[in-house]
Image 1: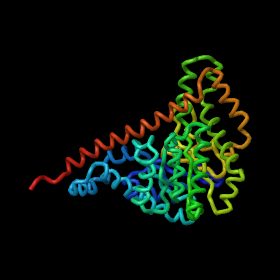
Image 2: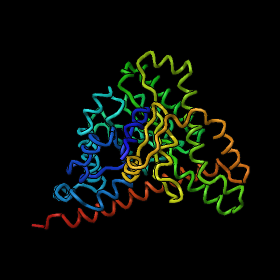
Image 3: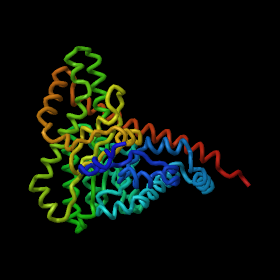
Image 4: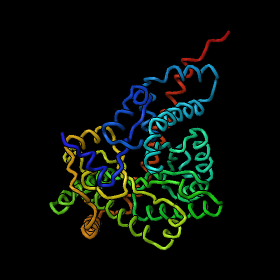
Length: 372
């Protein structure tokens, strides 16, 4: 057993767990992962909550109480999910304190049905921050066109944000611009910039899944030579963009006011293609001041077989650009792929949320007290 997780952490990669459930909280498993596996944060999304609550372990008593009160299904879901996030945030509070607020954070996402409505997203972000009521929460806002101004406004209110569903380099630059705009708004309001944190969740494996599918359809040897290269190239060029933006005079002015950089977060790091090493999107995306949020299977694989050999992003930008250009020359449109992935990402989370609404509604009906 190697201590690859410690080496990863020592290289400046914060290890977050991409999963949460009440059972994980109450069993002591989350605390154990923090204590023994170098986990310093947690991310959630509608799919994760849908799975946790539909499996039902630990939610019966709260659901019965909510049914007795006759609450709406939307309110029930918010009470359940924010309770889990609050409890996880309390478990992670020592990490938050030890890292001066950089880690020890738990993310919770705005209602995915609001992804294309700026005003509603901001209102939901404010409500979630108030409901969870923990300083180590990150509110997840998708990087849709409507999400960009919502990110700026939410940051401007002093609420820490995890920007999610980023696939394209162009959109990522807009996300960083929105973050800086938000900090400037917060400064104008007289808020303490040192208390505002943000990560930008750049999705990795889904890029390979879609581009590899198109490569396989072409079937040529030249095309097959590019399998499994697009996602890493895309993420590495995102890190290059991050380095550029946070070397500007605009950023320096905010940094002097105590602002924290918005860290790149590698999301969707579980390998979808069994032909690839299980730790591909961990081993090959090591760089300082990043986060890698992993499903538990990827965390275990990294512990058992991760090959952490230092910074694996520095010096790769020229090759990364060449790889994406080569994919484009095959007739595979980068712009089309990343827009498709964003649309699918929003749809997937909305579908999970709708499934959660239906299953929770059925549970509330089952547990509702009989008349009389």
